[in-house]
Image (cartoon, rainbow, N blue to C red):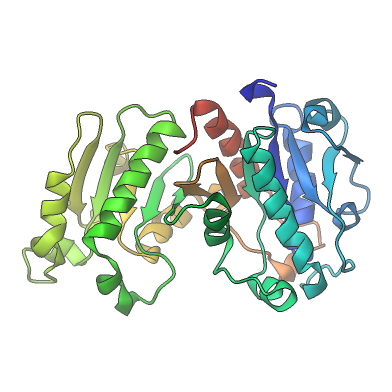
Length: 328
C-alpha cells in the first residue's frame, strides 16, 4: 500500500464514555474521504451501527464505503454506558498497543486515540502512566514528547503541563524549553510540512516580566535562550506578553506558539475554537492525534455528543500522515 492508501487506526478509548458513539458518527461523516479502522469490541458500538470486522488493514478503504471497519478486540467487561467498568481496562490498553503496533509496522498511516479513563485503567489493570501521552512515549521508547493543541485558528504547545502553577518556575528550566523548541520545530517541519517554521514564545510573567518589575526569569535566561536559538530554516521570536499573543493579527505572524504553562496555552485555543481543537503528540516516531475532550460519562449513550473534535483529529492525522516522514 502507498502512504495515501494506508488507513488511520482509532483506538476505542473508554467504552463506557462517548468514544464509541463518536466513532460511529465520524465514520458517517468521513467514510468516503478519510477511512479509518476502529480498534475495539464491536459489542460497545451503538445499536444499529453498520460495521464489518476486518483482519487486514488493506481492506479498510473498501469496507469503509459501506460500514465501519472494526479490528475486533475482545473485552472482559460488559456494556456500562455512562460509567467505567475496570474489567475493560486490559482491553482499552490492548487497543492502544495494537494501534501503535499497526502504525509502527507501516500498515496504518497514523493513530488517533479516543479518550481514556485513567482511574479505571489503574484500578483494573494497574496502569502506571499519568495518561495517554506518557504511555505512547513509553511504547515508542521516547523519553520526551510534547503536547500540541491544534485547530484551524491556532497551534499552541505548553512547555509544562499538568502541574500546579506554583511549581511552574522551577519546572521550566532552560533544558525543558530547549527540548520543547527542538521537538516543536521538527514536528512542524516533518508532520505539518512547514519548511521554515515560525515559532513565537510567550513570556512566563505578566508583560514578560516588564524589565524585571514583574518577574526575573525573562531577564535571567529566557531572553538570551531565544536570541541564541536561531537557525537558517527556523524563526523563533519572543518572549511576548501572553495577553497580546493571540489576537488575529498576532496569530498570522507565527505557525505555533510555545507557552510556559497549561492554561496559558489552552485558554486561547479553547476560546477560539472549542469544538475543533485537536491534541497532537510531537516527538513520537509516528503520527498521533486525539480529540481534545474527555469521556463525558454524563452524556454518554444519549446520542448528543458532538463529533467535531474527533472528526478534526482524524482529518488532521490523515493530513499529517501525508505531509512527510514522521519524527525521528
